[in-house]
Image 1 (cartoon, helix red, strand yellow):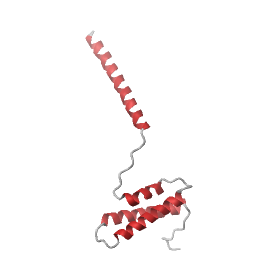
Image 2 (cartoon, rainbow, N blue to C red):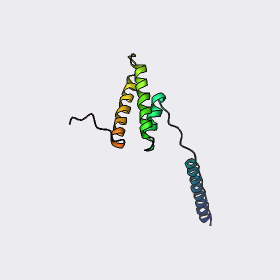
Image 3 (cartoon, one colour):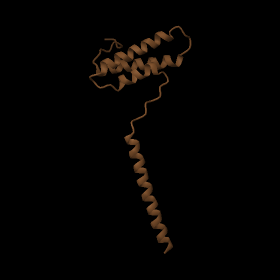
Image 4 (cartoon, rainbow, N blue to C red):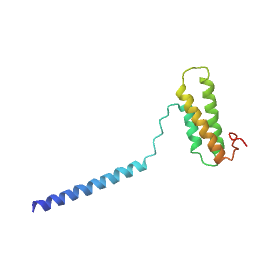
Length: 113
């Protein structure tokens, strides 16, 4: 009769483990998501806000992001360093142009007509 008892014990442990996992997943779902870590927070925070903005706030958030990017480009303009940040800034500006074109109906100034 011992094998039957072991099987019953294993089932109980398995059931308790599943319940514990479910509770753990549920508790993680109730916590607010952690704020992402930014390498360049002074412009990446407004940039991210623009990417996830509601339609009613989108224009304002895009303007704030563009301003933050422009200010950062001005701040590092005379420095030979910051190559990675310049690339990130360029990517961010390109993304904002796409957002403006697709969601805010801006013209596509980059294509020849």
